[in-house]
Structure formats: structure tokens, C-alpha cells
Image 1 (cartoon, protein in one colour):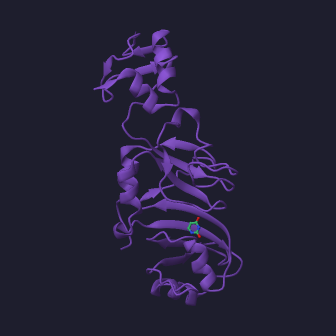
Image 2: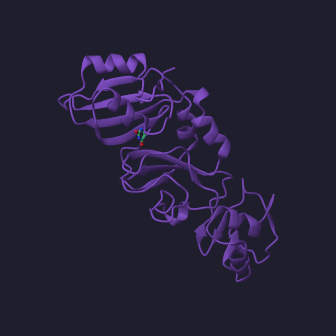
Image 3: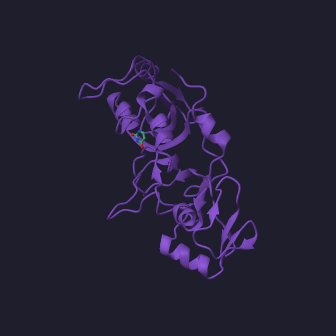
Length: 240
Ligand code: URA
């Protein structure tokens, strides 16, 4: 059981003080009845809470799928740039959210935002080998030699060796776009892998993490709450 004011403040954008104000003013309901008691004990698993008519998401942790647009940075805050947290809708904002992994500022596609550190660690740990799949548009054709080089493990100019990766030509793109599957997350990894074989990535989009695919109906820049099935899909069916 949790205190009502604490729960509202921890699951939304209100401060503890503002949550208390709302409760005292009669704007908060618990299971349909107005509750003016700030220290009322509520069960986040079963009680339904509203503030000014809006349901409070009482889940202990939140998992958000964002179709990241280009032009925002994968950070919790930034002095100059807009962050992936800035573009979340108000109803999905809550304290403690962070992007689980990074996409470059100019990369689009699937990014998970959560407040669950254990989950993020499990997903990002190199030991777990969770596959990440990207569509890369290039400045030149993909050759069979490049596919073999990816299979054998690309070596960056500085000597860093990548784990074996899969490179497939995306049909009907004249060999100019590929689907890359990697199971690690080195800085600028996909761009550097292509650079090592003489290609420049002109557009990059992440389409999946594990067996979780970017929802094709989710427009660029939009976010949605993930389901338990979505979360489980991340850890299913890896390349390694
Ligand atoms: N690899 C890159 O080069 N950039 C990304 O944003 C993700 C993977």
C-alpha cells in the first residue's frame, strides 16, 4: 500500500505539494469516490485513481515505445537540444524516465523509454545479446563482400572488433538499402561498420529490438505505452 499523495506525485508530473493541494480540493477520486485525505493508503495494483477527471497510471514501472524522430537527442536532459523525454505526451510523463539505450540525433525509429533500471540493464547488457535491427540507406550499393565482412565481424579503423552481424539487401532498393542485425551497442556502431566497408549511411532507422518491432501504425514522433507482451518480445528469438 502507498500513500495517496506520494503515489500521485511519483506517477505523474505533479509535485508532492501540488498532489496534496489537488487531494484537499476534492479533485482526486479513489475507486470513484472523492478522497480528501492526503495520507489515505491505496493499492497501486487494484485501486483506480483520478486527478481532475484524468486516470493516474498506477503501474509501478512504465515502458514506452517511441518512434523517435530525427533532431532529438537520446538523453534525459540537455541544455541546448530537445530530448526524447521533451516530446512525450503529458499523460506518459512521470519522474525517473530515461531512454533505455541511445539512438544518434539523426537516427529515427524504435526507442524504449522506461523508469525500470533493472529492465534496461537486462536489455542493454552485452551478455544478453539482444538483437537490434536497423534499416540503413547508403550512398552506394551493398556488395556480397560487404555481407561476408559483416558476417565475419567488422573491424573498425581503431582496431575495435565487432561481433558477427547480419546484412541483408532490402528488396526493391537497387542494393542501396540494407537491413542490419547487430547484438551489441557500440557508439555509432552501424555507421562505423558501413564506413569500414567504404559506405556512408545517409539514413538510419531502428525497426526492432529482440522480437519487438516498431509499430508500423505509430507515426514518427509519437509514443505509446507498451504491453507485457511487448516487453516479453524483447527477450525472445535472438541471433546469438
Ligand atoms: N548505430 C549508429 O551508428 N547509430 C545509431 O543511432 C544506432 C546504431
